[in-house]
Length: 112
Length: 114
Image (cartoon, rainbow over all chains, first blue to last red; front, side):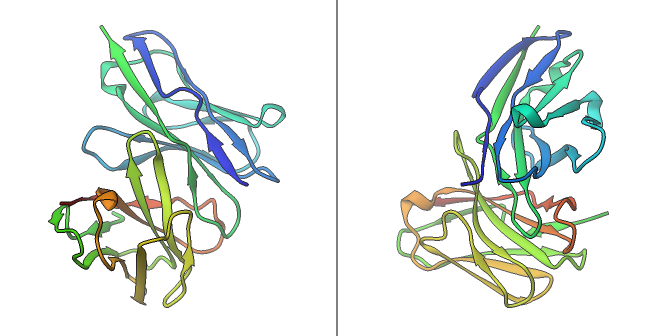
């Protein structure tokens, strides 16, 4: 069955430190891949998406993600975290004609 | 600016009541979705509509039905609400075709069943 896995439920990072959130997918063929962020009480905001081509994808708010076919991964990174990045992050995937499947999310806390 | 509007942001309903959650999009999108979001479980797909009067069950359709009579509106119906349906419900829409198209979400409807 198709699935998206986010191994880390909760991560705490110091402000100014780098961040990497992990995402693995299980699909027969490479799906379209997405990262969304949800701040408390807010809706989902798209950070970035990967369709094909360059495996390093740039997104909004200084985020980037790297697609690695060999590892079935699409990890999200940010070089320097700001307190305002504290939120819940969702990785998602789909193939043509299908709905998005989401991971269970990773909650990011930022310590000062 | 794109807009997916969920008319009811917060609802409290009694067990056994019939509940309607309404979603309207103004982007002429063919695809519309209903998800529910629960802590620790992420977003789970309830129903998916490819186009008007077309629907497909998602991962957790039990206890829910949907209606898509007009392109812009996608309704989620809880025939007989139960306490385990207390959750946040998210509606979304997407343009048909390349399924890598961006999916747009509404702000969510918080439903409490007592």
